Amino acid sequence: MSSKIDLMIDEENELTFQVQIEGTRPGSAKCRLMLESKGMSLAFEGQSTGDEVSVTLPPLDHVLKEGTYDMTLEVVVDDRFFEPLKLQGEFEKRLKVTAEAVTVRTKPKVKTSASLVEVKKKAKTAKVNVINKSKKKQISENHNNSKKGFSDQDIMNLIKKLTGDK
Image (cartoon, rainbow, N blue to C red):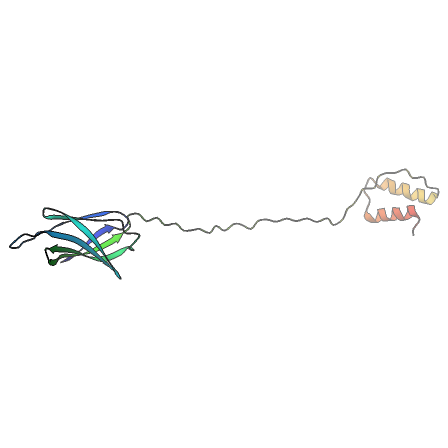
């Protein structure tokens, strides 16, 4: 007879079996629970108290993966071997905690840049003693226009006239 039991792989499990030994003379019995996995078998000794056998399975998450495993209760009386019970143990973790990294997409940063293209200086009003009357007249005309602001061309023309360049 094979039955299925649910067990926790990450906790200690205690299984209790009722075992009856009948025969012409009673002998000393030893019980163990065998757990079969691919390429490996694990044996867990049982503790007898009367007709009950208790087997404690420690946490097995470091040895086994979650899943179903064949288990057999073995009883050895004197020099005779018996397998009175076969089970399937469904091992699961009690708590599952999973974490997954979430990619946060950031908005592109706004970048600004600036560079100096041209420097404009306002011409200061200066007293200039000019001998040439025509130049003096032009300077005073330009000076009267300074309230409106000079263009680059006006400044260049003023410099040329002051230096005598044509």
